[in-house]
Image 1 (cartoon, rainbow over the protein chains, first blue to last red):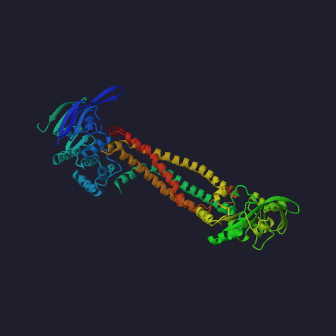
Image 2 (tube, rainbow over the protein chains, first blue to last red):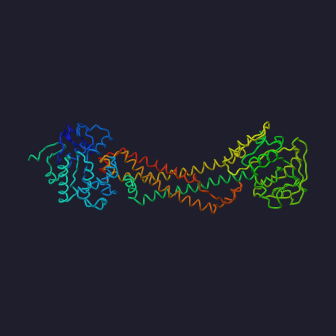
Image 3 (cartoon, rainbow over the protein chains, first blue to last red):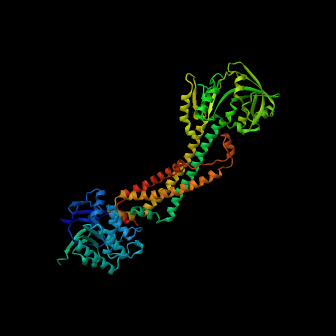
Length: 230
Length: 409
């Protein structure tokens, strides 16, 4: 079974008087354990596709199937539940809750999932250690570097061991060394936990880590390269 | 501490000045409400107690119809034995019999019409403040007969003083001519000119002789230590009344209908003002929470994308508001209680109050009392309105779309 299947997705935005086709009959299938980069210039449709896969945005037409379940027609509440338990998100701007510490940011998602307090705490400490942030548990986002914040965001995304992690320009605000470190972490998680990664980027170094590179232009997939085979 | 509570708490202190201002508004309104309601309830209690203790009593036993049309013929037979029986049963001296007539009171120079009240001198002191208002001479004694106590205004009008004689002329119970010569033994001064001009008191036994009452009187006054006891005692008295005698027991509300109406009218206007205060506070909270929600749109977009439902986010906003409300409630109720306590020791007064309070036979200073009711009623209403004020900002979150919210700066 595929981790992600998109069938003939279309999405049009209206910007002033102009209709912009963000997704133009896009179909793609991503296997479990895949490590896929969506590459496109700005406005190419990669974030819209990522949002559609993550249930953050509904396509105008077409189907999105995650782990065998069609999600594009699910009600808001069920979509939220799906995001909470099956999908991890990593954003360009880290997007941590500023008033919570690193550990609390991670625990917060688990609390919403209903994980007991003691287990939450233990798992948060473990995952922070796994992403290389042992000892920084009690720091708030404002007291951490961009790289550290992004690692906390990754830890938050993967702490519940989701089958699918969606990352939107995760390295855009990081220097090259930190970006490499983050991609190594992604690859490690992909290899050790068989987590499926779908990363939207136009960073060539990020693309070099991908097993599969999907290029988009004007809302359409124009190239689909299996880099493992290459 | 629960993580969601911690998040709500820290969210509040992102903008400490705004949070303190909002807490301050809630606190101030709570403090004011606790104090004002304590003062108000204290004032009503005093008004009721003082008015009833002045003369009316909490309960009266009368002949049916006497309350509306006070005719000489509408009597309570054997009034003193009945009063004695009740005093024995309740083991209380706060029960006394009275009779009332209207008579022309004449001095050598002048005549005036007044109410002549026959009282039991030994017990009247326990059911009326009048004996304590005697400023010249003394109140009636048990051995007195043809003695009278009159008000200072009447004494001035009649141009009489202590020791002078007055002539009473009126109608007896049977319609016959009633007359007596009495000696002034006391002059009272209540401060209410009308009262001091229109009331005179003579011993009940002498009254019964002069007005041919044949052992009867017009009513028995019962004073109770607590107003809350009235319904129970009323039932007990009704059960004790002699069978076959046509008598009724009226409570203070029936005896002084104007008192409750005055309290109700005062309460309505006061609670209208409190309502405005509470609504102003609610708008202050609404403003704070709306701003707080709007400036966190981006952050709410993040947590929505992580899988939180708008309902959970709404509950977070309500929790933040509840914390604001509880802080305002605790500080406000505490300060209000302390403030009220200070006045309960030192008394409360304002210019012109003496004039107003005299009408209700109240002291010139009030001593408000902190009660559970006055401590809770205002803050509880403020708290409910504080939470209601957060419902709109919380409901707005339902319309939030994660992708659009994350685009907000």
